[in-house]
Amino acid sequence: MEKAIVTLGLPQDIDPAKALLDEISRTYGTVLWLQGKVRELGPDQLVWGEVEKQQGIGPQGPVDTTTERAEFNAWYQLYLGERKHLVAVTTAALKAGIEERRVRLAEQQGDLVAQAIRSILNALNLTPGQWELVPTVVPAALRSLGELAP
Image (cartoon, rainbow, N blue to C red):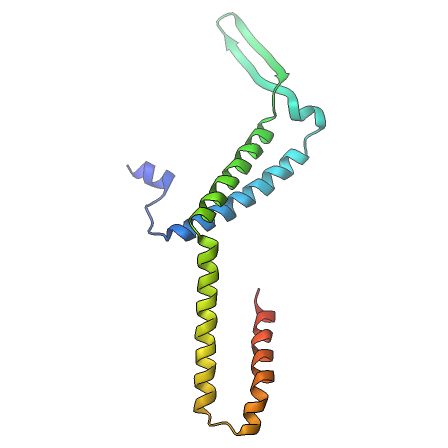
């Protein structure tokens, strides 16, 4: 049991939407890495190569054989599999409405910020001249926050 926990990890509580987004990110990174490995292959290596090698001592004595044939390279097969997985998890996320949920959350956060700004400005008892500056000063300050974001 302990070995299985070490190998597979301990169960964790996670938001399903976060799990999907994390899987998309992880899979996309793997796809890019595998794409690099595939690009390192020569054109002939993509569809022809060593598929089995036996060395050692067999019932008949020493064995040293290599089998080559036309077959997609293992790196290419992994690459295709990860691309297929990326499409599957991305489709699952879209079906789950994750992107729409992120947009709604951003809109709600924007509403909260706007409410906080209105509350602050109202509490400051601004003069009419200061109120005239609000449409220029506040948006400029908010845009500068976007420039600080990573």
